[in-house]
Image 1 (tube, rainbow, N blue to C red):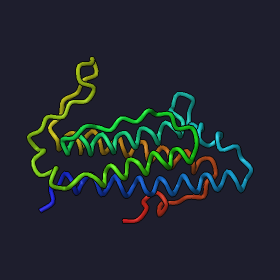
Image 2: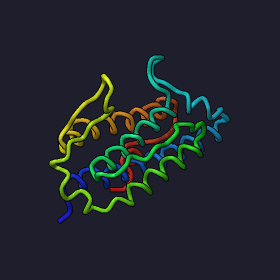
Image 3: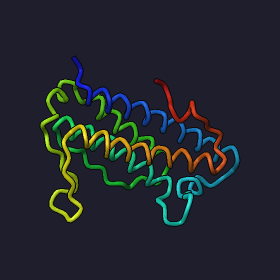
Image 4: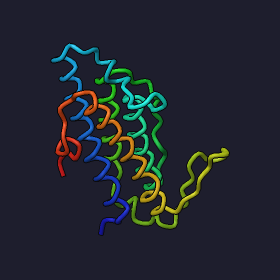
Length: 169
């Protein structure tokens, strides 16, 4: 039987990242149709102290790949965070979805006893058991950044709705 941590993580991350990719495609099409500099959307913020859209997408993908890797007990893939365009964000999303697809469900069979440490060796180090990490840290963080990316685009006039946000389920 597939482990509950796999079921609660990998399919959810993939669904939402693929939906985010489609929302970003709509944003790029919107910018083209309205003759808006794409950078205006990519650098959009709801408030000056927030990360812009580009960074929201990067962080969402970081949480998906990081959680998947940690729960599977494999090395977290490193990504340089250098994306500056919609096309580069699409590539990043596709790379993370491909990585998630590479994680066999059997890797999640016994992670419950695995300690997960974030930012090991730093003053911000946090330790979790696998289910607490996924359900109380990684998933909420992931959804915060996906939702913020969606809200930034909706706020800037991109015609997206709940079906776009949710993607295929």
